[in-house]
Length: 131
Image (cartoon, rainbow, N blue to C red; front, side):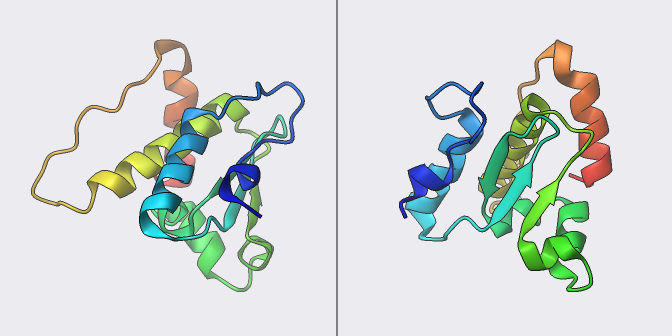
């Protein structure tokens, strides 16, 4: 199965073009040869397939995925009842942004763009995920 098909969202309301988070995952896969292996499912059913290296940058996800006692760690799928798809998409974008820019610790991270209307929800999600 090719990476592009793994990154598509099953939600019928999602436009056919790839989201920025999906493009980041695909670009990272093409550069690194890694295979995406964690599914993040938003409250509205949108699904994002994320590389473990990116997902584990969020402390909560790292704890869930690396602890065999959690079903999420075995299934490699995490459902978020309180995080809508547009917010989870921005979280995924940030995780890839952080993964891409964290390789060089000497360089200060550039500002990550946020839309004012989603800033509060995104801050709550980032706090919950320890991202």
